[in-house]
Structures are given as C-alpha cells and as structure tokens.
Amino acid sequence: MTHPATSRPAVADTVLTGARVRTLDADRPYARAVAVKDGRIVAVGDDDDVRGWRGADTEVVDLAGATLTPGLVDGHSHPYLGVTMSTGLDLSRCRDLDELRAALATRARTTGPGDWVLAHSLDHNVFGGHPVHHDLIDPALGGVPALIRLYDGHSALASGPALTAAGIDGPRRFAQRAQVVCDPDGRPTGHLVEFAAMSLMDPVLPRESTAARRGRLLALLRDMAATGLTGAHVMDLQEPDALGVLAGIEEDGELPVRLRIAPWCMPGTDEEGLDHLIETQRSHGRRWRVGGVKFFMDGTVEGGTAWLEHADCHGQGTEAFWPDPAAYTRAVHHLARAGVRTVTHAIGDAAVRHVLDTVELLDDDRQRALHRIEHIETVPDSQLPRFARLGVAASMQPTHLAYTRADHRDEWSTRLGEERAGRAWRCRDLRDAGATLVLGSDWPIAHYDPREVLATARLRRLPGRPDVEPVRAEQALTGLMALEGCTSHAARAVGEEDVAGRIAPGCRADLTAFAVDPVTAPADELAEAPVTLTMTGGTVVHRA
Image 1 (tube, helix red, strand yellow):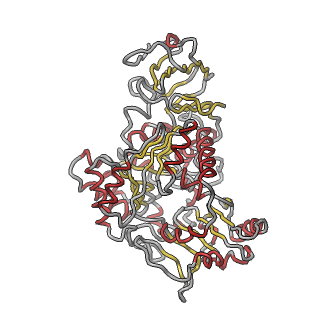
Image 2 (image 1 turned 90 degrees about the vertical axis):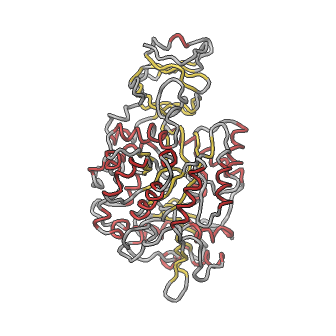
Image 3 (image 1 turned 30 degrees about the vertical axis):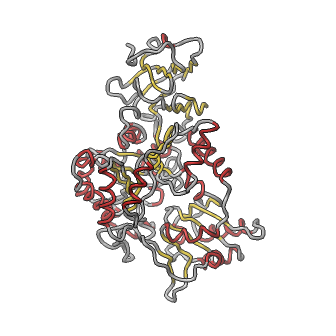
C-alpha cells in the first residue's frame, strides 16, 4: 500500500528501491522503497507502490538489499574547531612515555627554522601517574617549541620553549575555572587546563589561511558523509570566520553534512551578550543554521575540573566552571524565555544536578523542554528520573569509554574512586528511565564514524577489541536504541521530530544505507560494514 504525500507532484527526483527500509515511523515501521522530490520524502512503500513516481528524469537507485535508515546524525561534534584541534601529529596510539618521546623526536627532526611541533589526541594515561610536565618531553624535542593537545580537548601540554614564546612565566587569574599549572616555586609546568589557559598560546601558534581551513573543513565533511553521517550537532562557534567559511562553501556548492550550530556562552557574559546570542539564532544557510547555545558547567575528570558533589581522589573537582553557578542559571533562564535551546557540558554529578535544578526552576514545560545535557559521565540514581520528568535530553558519547577500563586502573577511574567510577556512562539506565538519549562522537575527542558509535553503545567497548573487558556491560543499548540515538532521538532533542529522524512523507530526505542491518548485525561487524549510500537533502553525497 502506498503512503503518499499530501499533494503529489508529477515525478520524483530520485527513487530508492530494493531496500530493507527501517523507517522508525510508527505508522509504517518497514518498507521496500522511497521516493524523493525537492529534498523531501514524498512516498514510502513497496517497489510497486513508488513506481508511479518515476519519470524520464527520475534517478532510480537499486539498493540491492541494503538496509535504509533515517540519515545518521552525530549528536555532538566540533568540525570547525576540530580542524584546528587535530592539526599536526596524531598521538592517539601512544601508550607510554617512551612512545610519546619517540614520536615527538621523530617529528622534531623534520622541522625547519621557526617551525613548531603541533600534536593532538594524547591520552592522559600515557603519563603513568606522573604529573603532566614539559620536563618529560623537552629533551626529545631538542629545543623545538611544541604544543600537545590532550585527548579531552580541555587541556594541553606546552614545551618549555613554547611557554617562553608565549610569555607564560607564572600563574594567571581567569574569569572561568582555568589554570596555568605551576610547581611549588611558581614555575609553569606546561600543563594548561581549560580554554582560557590554552588560549594564551594562540598569539604565537602557526595559523593557516582561511582558504586552507575551508578546504580542510569541506574534506572533513565529505569524509563524514562517507561514514553515513547526514548531519551533526555542532557544539562551538568560536572562530570569527566560521559562518563566513560555511557561507563560502555554499556559494560554490553544497555542504555534504547538515550542521546545526550552538555557539558558546562563557562565564561573564552579560545581558547584552545573551541578547546577541539570541539574535545569532537567525543566522542560517541552506544546510547550516545556528540553533541553540552551548554552556560549560564543568571541565573534565582527568583534568580535575569536573564538578563533583565530593572532591576527587586528588582533592579537586569541587568548583563549577562558572565561578557563580547562579549566574549560569540566570543566563539559561534568559535564553529559555526567548525560546532558545541550550546544551550544557556537565560531566560530574554536581554539574548534572545543577543543570537539572536550573531547568526545574523554569516557568513552564515549554521552556523546560528546550534543554539538554552533554556527556553525563557519572550520575547517581537520584538524578536519572529527572531527565524524563523535566523533558531534558541526555547527550552521550559511547566511544569515550575507550579512555576508561573495567578494572578501574585508569586516570578517569582512579580520580573518581570506585563508587563514582561504577556509574560510568549510564546510557541504558537513562533510556530505561524514559529519557531522550542522543548519541555522538565529540569529534575530534573520538572518531566521528557513527558505525563505531553505534557498535560501542552495544558493546561497551570499542569494536574489534574482543580482548577488552566491557565497561559496565549492563549499560549496553540494544541495536534499535543505538540507531534511535543517532536518528529519531537526535531529531527529538532539537525539536525536529516532525521533519527528521524518520523515513516518512514530508520529512527531509536525509538517508543512510548500510550493507548490513545496523540493528541486528553483530556490533563488531557493523563497525566495518560498508555504507552503500548517503543522501543529504535529497542529494546523494556518498555512494559506494
């Protein structure tokens, strides 16, 4: 039986046939074919049902048994900021100090006069419990200045010459919770914690041209599309030329991935600044738009800046990122009254509680439904039912589990202690409590490939690593729950459930086709399965 749109145009632009369609639409959960016109789905049914939508100019694509799903969305990504953060040497494979030093020495030998060694994605566990200090790397660099971004994105290690170049010779005071870590004699160790401290390096770091940045961003988005992504919730808008770069790409063509951008609101933002953020919500292109505002309620566990109800095992973590948490609450309420959605980075249990408290104080359910919390790495039982009751979406990144271990012999777990480490990434508990659960990667903190995200959500370990013990296996999602986290729940979290997250007439034609069924295929197999086709806005942006 055909499932036509309200008004039927003469012919479709594209008809996809021969598929196993998982629509995630309650009215028709399964189908075999889909017709698309003007970037929208116009019919869903069997192959015979959509035959009448074909015309001389219709492209007919036989998916040959592939499983077609709503287009996958990365619920937390940093594509623009990430092309800067991921510049240089990838240190994600380093497992100890010897490997780190060898990698840095090799790169330093290839530098020319005035060059820097830039590196990223270094695991805190590499330091083996030693304090992060430039003395550990300076001999390997041979005098070449270096800046290494740690994997959490909230901290970095600057070499001795890099500190000198930036004029960092002692502690600094910041409006937000940030720190230039110093030894007992007041000398900087090179460990820069949180954004304000890391930004002290910006004036002396090498910078690429806007044209080069634009080229790298477009290449990244194409690579993302090849993994099945049709959209991303972008959690930053810090670079002043970011929207200009996106507009420039659309002057020459189309974005292969749809971007919904939430600019940051940092401590100290006054009412005028909040009103500017409200005005910014009007900015949009064909496949990008500003939609929401991003807050930080805390930092990271490994950096000692997650806001916890009780101090971590180093005596840290008892302060919020906003020095005055009540100012955060006032800012969120100001935006909510204007109908602006907010997303808040909250990793520690105190941070999560404060965001939920803030939402509960709002005037009505309409305003409460505008908010979501990012990361939620450790949370007690008492907070779980509040998500569904208040309408607050939970946004989590399963692949971050790679930075912790089931035996708790890792930096994240040892800082938190056994009880809190035992509450790691409670994805299933949140789903079972009725919460909307969005899944993402937090690229470049973890890889953007959504197949890896889907697989890890089911395995509680990275795919392809059966030797690794899962972290709290009882928190695994079903295959359907994981798919919903990248489709229907992602749409619901931003108020787009009427036009996205389902395969139904009237919805945007953002579609992903897998060689296997992402719901029933073994999770390790899914992570390696080909993406047959990716369609964004009715345009095929990737075809295997």
